[in-house]
Length: 227
Image (cartoon, rainbow, N blue to C red; front, side, top):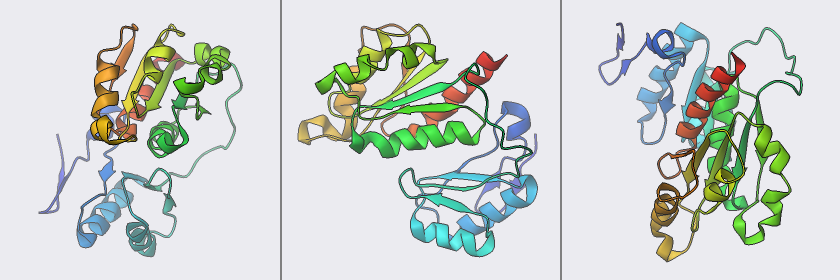
């Protein structure tokens, strides 16, 4: 197994071959000079780089050395996409992932999940602001939910959305608790505990605000569905 030594980082150059996914950069907290060198090395090797939790200033920095870099201010994803052979979109019979959010405030985490999956080649359908305080909203999307190879349910507050979705579908549900909520939500702990203790079957839970982790696992499920 190989890696590239940068003194401050050891880039896992074999990861894509081993796992099917290239190394991803967690941008938050990295010193500017380190981040630039990491992006440059990964871009030189693969012609693409995917980073999460980036700031606008980090985007400006990376764009100054890699002009094709793109930044999404909602998901905070900083990416350099590979050159695509074709922009042809899959037809409606192709497998897809659904990403749904309890509220509009949960969309940044939901978008991190959705854009992660899309970057790695999955087809994604979004259903936002369908929390349980107006349960008719999620019930009206039952057909789309049931047609998905998996569903990512992103919610803060009490985090009940995942249980509702889990009771509607036969395929896996990936629950993502968010830190959205008032004081007693304890920065997402309330939603996390609700999701872990769900009585609905087929639900797995990732860490608080971890849209990337949910998008990664959903892509693995998507790839299996495509086979």
